Image 1 (cartoon, one colour):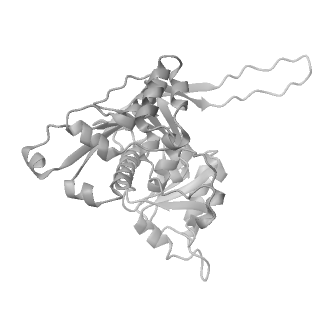
Image 2: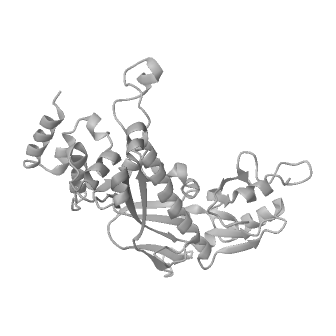
Image 3: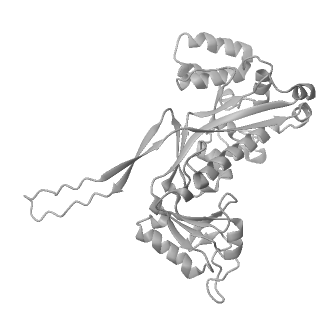
Length: 366
């Protein structure tokens, strides 16, 4: 087996002879599934030197394969580097079920990375990633009608659809995290911890904007502020009222099988304690369903609010193939003296609603 320096030299030479894709394929399977170290990258950047070694090589290949400029002082990192990786089973070993694992690795997608932290993605939000510039998404504002032909010589009446469009433009969210030298030395799971807190923070910010965004201050227009959303009073909300909500959605031709619910923990508490009828089950069932459809809870939903609809009509558009990681050698004098490290990530995304009529918002649930 080649040592890392020899392997790196071999690939560097090979890049001059073949495409970047082929060069990346020269990495063995173990190298390809290894994640860069956030801590080591931050150590490089805060020292004022470019990211080097395996981390630098892998990130340079990532940029090359996607046709973007590589900046060793502000590297672009793939979404998969936010995924928390568990210690893998030993392939080919009988202990712990190792024979159940193949030798390869399927990298987690963007949805898989964020789903554990996002009730909206779990509810079926549509996700696009890899956008490189402002994007226009078409939408139908009037359906094709057509007509029946009375005889085989008749012509079909012209009834083109009414098409509209939605523009997605990048809106950037950023967050920083600081940690001490002692934590870096003593916490063996610091890498996974950093990935987890940044993935959770990023998707919570995006979910919050997707629901409540004011369409200003750098944020997108949130679902609850969009025109055309169905509304309903939640006063003494009953089982019959929940079916009124479903009826409103069905009348708007929303895909009935795709309907799901989203509410606050307090709303769930109210409906999970209210019987559908005397001696019957509860409106919000123990297996988290309302009217037989999946229901999620989140603290980002405004107080007393319950939302029902087809969440695939809500779209997340991610720009670029990953996130930007930065650190700086110019921390405060106190940070320098205390050995504090800091990193910042930046994510560019937009959210928009394809069909406002796909949702009903129940307010002031009591």
